[in-house]
Image (cartoon, rainbow, N blue to C red; front, side, top):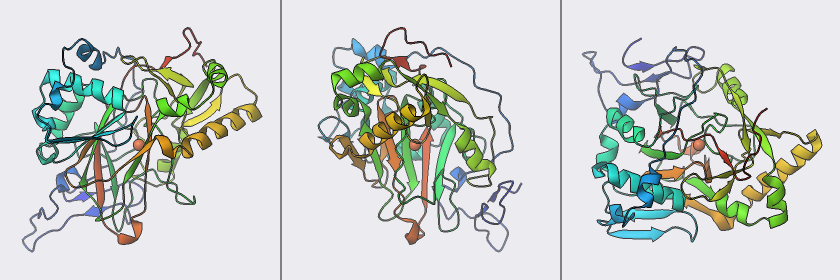
Length: 366
Ligand SMILES: [Fe+2]
């Protein structure tokens, strides 16, 4: 395959990104991040294997000042009382191991951190992205998404005038789909880093919600019942989306289904969070079909309506966002399609522990 194309197996007409070539045939790099455009390799990966996750946030718990990594900040703003902090003046790329541990703890506590003016980080390139993410856990390789060529650990979102390589449902009245990333994995992601390399002039914000706060809205009696429950999370629909020729048309690892508790406990903060999402949760085990459907619908509606526990990130250039997938959910906002402008983002996605049930000894077998 030419180095100047990104080609998919099933939809070459619509899913090929052609970069510009000069009259001499040399590739021009008009787009600053052309080396990070989505590539859909034909590789096939074996199933993921379990591993022991040591959360870096633990190491910061006994630190005398676990927020000293923010000492150079010129401005720190709490986006909402219980979710999200915006930071100016801290160069993430310069954080040492201790600073990264503190960062992990702060993200666990605030759910979402938004760092502005991070061009150094973004321009550090994919080898750095891998090194950065590996500090926080084993890097997840997405089964269906595009990645920069030779860097399968970097998950890309991409949309421009001609192509979309996102997992988007186009026959819905809304693009809002709350989810926690790849929650179908046995050990879903923890601290996640995401940034945009290119963005529309307006639109394409990202919504976040606190699943800790969402849970706290419910009555103690109801929460006690939810703690006894577990649900199936499935990657099948996402894989079928690709198999139907959308996204890049590639499934590099067979989809899995795993069982997680409805309420999980964060390993470092001990906080309890609701852990269901419309995108990947399919059914509650042990309940009758109607009971499961009704209860999940209630919980999804509850998440949908939670404007009082949500935050919205506006992507000014050179913003790097980190969130803890264990205690938050998020949704893309696809409101910029008519502009035909490019939105190109990269995600670094370390896996974490198998979700810890809030109810000790909950049986998580199928
Ligand atoms: Fe996501």
